[in-house]
Image (cartoon, rainbow, N blue to C red; front, side, top):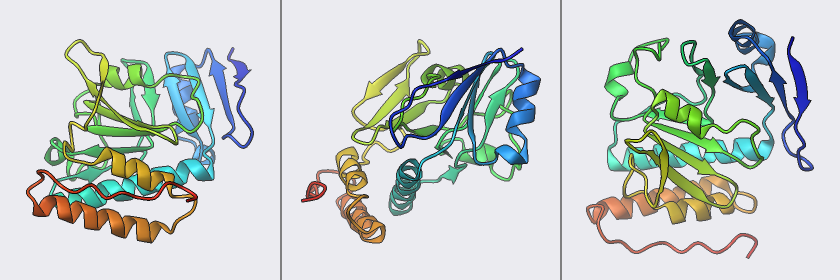
Length: 231
């Protein structure tokens, strides 16, 4: 029988709790239920974390998604976005939903497929995790088990890229493997300004920056300095 452990959370954090001793079949039933459409689930070999999402979490995820699209458009990068699709495999006894995920080098392999079978289809090339509240179940080992080449993590301050090494472990990288010239510092500055600036104006400024980078052949560029938040 499953036992329930309520995880402590700071004020205004998303509601989150963990079920222990959950079978794969029970996870499937909960995950596929229409009643749980707005609940984020992470299943790891009998442990199931359920979490609701805050407005802040969704703002960061949505805006970062837009910036990635802008960068792909301006650099002519082939991309297929899958948002927070469920990624699961019974043989690994694991399942989860990224905040955002993308096919890049493998985009053509999955194009046109309505459903993916991750025992034969490739995992996303890039996954994004917004971590403004602590997660009870660590997800990097899960991403590694599925062979996701790159994971970004944003904690409300820093955007970090992790690349999967040959030993099956993630290593933090100063730049993205999927988007090597993406200016992480500028993206961080834009995300930090979400609470006090118009999203459309922030996105327009990033598109201008991306076009300037492309104009000089993705080489040396003048980095745009954004004022700090609440300045």
